[in-house]
Length: 145
Image: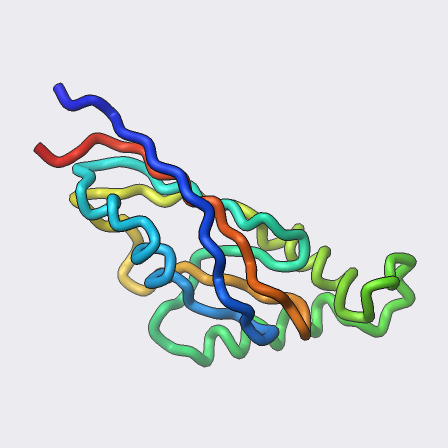
């Protein structure tokens, strides 16, 4: 019987403009040990309160544009938020991050993330002038024999 293995690292995703961005390749390249697992689980945590991560469409980039448009209409900046010391995009960014989420767990099967055909890992950047974003990647699983 194989002994489970664990890996963890913190990666930095370069600054992105406001919007929805595919980051799956960056994550997979930062955790090459995925390829060595028969089965397991990759947990991802974004260490920020004004950006979020999620799974969604990975083929048609219009989906990312439409998602950003919807989020901006659903959670507008022109509401008199009490928390406004970091600019008009800050409080809406916190709300968007709370709705979308800060962590994911993705199954690993035969050395690959076990996602649906059209699923991809997104970083939702909710700020106009964001810095780089830190992700904690924790991988656990059973190695291939």
